[in-house]
Length: 523
Image (tube, rainbow, N blue to C red; front, side):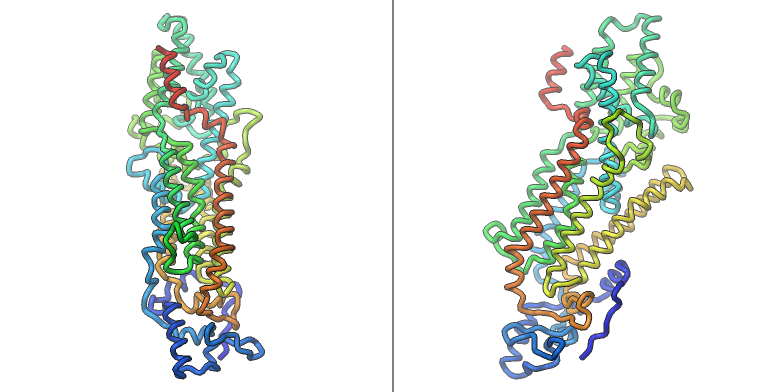
């Protein structure tokens, strides 16, 4: 029986659509089918030279009574079934529950219910989310470089205070505005007003600057330790898939399960970076502290009035309510910064946007590559249905940041409308991707067609039934190596992100000892 040759270059999303349209009735149980065929061979109801068994190109049999290998039509004739995986629970507990725990630990700017939309942006556009986080840290780094340029005027102790205030100003200014210039204008106006009114005593400016910086740093959340525990649980579950003493054994071979789990490892650096950056306890906290600083410094109008005076675009905010609502799409959200290229200059140590983009792309690329290799090595070796799932979702993830950029830079709508269009685009990508990954773990691709390697083997497509030894060999050699390498690379990328952002992270991440010492010094 000759199998018709499928197209050699199918479109990834078309293949995924065709695969997902296959009803569960075509699913099969490999162990049950193997036991049934062995019984039929032993009682003579199935001849060993049947055309249903796979043969080489010259007609030599490629299967034995103890190791039957079926052709694709033979598998469809003998191994039909109506059930999904019988061990759905253990499969999902291996990686899905820890992944959900990881996602729940993402730290985004407090935007009430809108923060949940940022989860859709993370899952629908992970590269843009990571790139935006890195741009935020780089902006802080440039604030630190700008503060270092004022070191002779402020003194060594005041450098960090100035840098922290500049980092907070960067959150409330219009995209592309230089917080150092705005800060100098505020200080200059305050000094001129003090000379006329004699409102602040000598040293009051330094105390005001120090107290403002300390309050800003003290208002930041710090959930990095909790996130490390969530990552540790994720790693534990992956180890449990290999080590019987830890996991208590597996109800089925972990090849496809581990391959799918590796596909989501880009979440590790994304979640860790978001918690390293952290955020304010409220979207109004930063503005309130800076507003008090401006009023005490200049003894005049508040921060919103100064923003309207310095930036004409800020005049569109009629009151604080409109201003705070606009933070969702104006760039205040750390995982959504549409104006990436409009970042102010800080100094000669500025990192390029290309380097930051490369760091954002690498986690998704590594996850895709390792997942593809693991799924490829699932017997019979070759491209299978899960590979096309990975290809299709990865293609959407790599195209998504370009679409985000296109939505914003076409300027066909307002910033608010562009934000909602971006969220709709992310929802269209994120929801089907997560559902497809979930159904894959439940047995969507547990069919003769998907287990035959038909996309790469074509006429030689076949389904080996006794693969326990091969899975066990991979479980002890190939899978642990690839999983360890993948996780090590993800942690190395996170370390690289922290190294690139080491200057900026110093602005807002004050240790408890530093905060206590600053409070004691002020007293």
